[in-house]
Length: 309
Image (cartoon, helix red, strand yellow):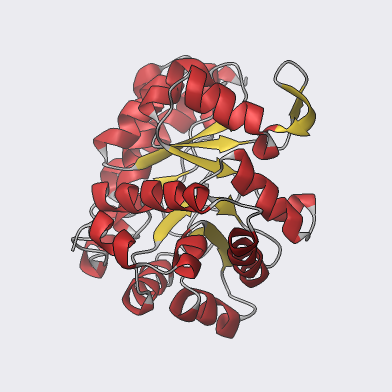
């Protein structure tokens, strides 16, 4: 069944739940809650935080098996989300200091291959202000990994937006765009700049919503601003409840939720999740931490260390 066929059969609540992405730490301090959010409430995705090559693939496969619709699994390897046992590369900033586009592309290619083997389909990378971001995007795409460009409204976003599957909207106020709202909650920023001026058609992801507090009103403001993914709200279940109730009350239009759910499902379809949502655990040992990847990381680390002397 295609993404659009699934969409036509979804309830309002299921569409709202697709917009909510939860954070999943290892070890999980509340596995029952995670199980309910994935199995019963049907969240659209999750951001992995930590874990190892031993537990991440099995956890991702569990989630994909019990979820009614495929789950989009994301990670941010630059912000403490690295998986233990995976190849450790110098940071993107360290690679940028070398000025080597080849290093940036190779690093991204190997990271992308390892992430995909673990069941991850979207990486929160690269940063738009990275001078080697374009090379990194090429590397991730070579590995068939989706990129979430960080972060709008950084100056580099307009030049790179067309190459990104998703864009992270930050929590910064940008006077030139909207003097009253941070970008992640600004209709002017998301609908006006990203959608109309830049003609961006990919996913718009909020930065972590729990950083702004626990109010359900934040969820509604982000949805009304045009965000497709509501990343890590303080209370995911309450976020789904609030969004569903707001649509029924007319505070959020049904078309807003429909558009977001459509983009999410089509993205999942393009990444192959509807065809095969499970990761091959047997491939993890072959790909993650492969000798060629570690050798490349060592070469890069050596160059970086020489620059720091």
